Length: 227
Image (tube, rainbow, N blue to C red; front, side):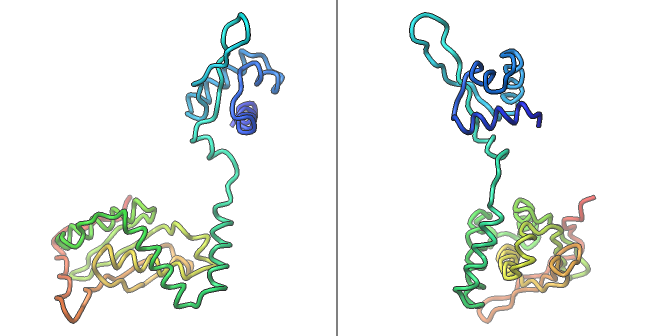
């Protein structure tokens, strides 16, 4: 970003709002130049001009400029640091089994955004819906079918920087895949081990009270790897 526009954003962050005259004085620039940079920031939806400051006595009112919510992305954030610290604290106060339960609960929160009718869908449609949801969550997922064998790949780990120090997070992914597909994931490859993707063999979920999930026929095309 142009240094002048960055300084405008910083000034508005500190002062909440400002006129062109105030920004020109701060930047030591001509008002026409400030207006040019403001127009570009407005075009990028980082600044808005929605208020007017009334002058005491005669004179035209002056328009006030302020940041939009989107401008917040241009300022420092410590989400990653907070996430790392949170994981370290949790691991100090919880047992490994309790940590696994926490990861499973986090997966359940994520699953609240998944389609509610997954259990009612035919196997092929359910798998397609599961892949679509995983992709919306940033996993870059696709599936291959070899005979009756179903292989699920996730090419990206949205939590890779955390997982390298806290592999417990992978329990969340296992829960997501299990609950979304209705099948049991058997991990074959792991990004954490330096492999290019996480790969799972999806096995029918066998229970004592219900029949296993039927296989998806090889003749039915599944989502293929993106080019």
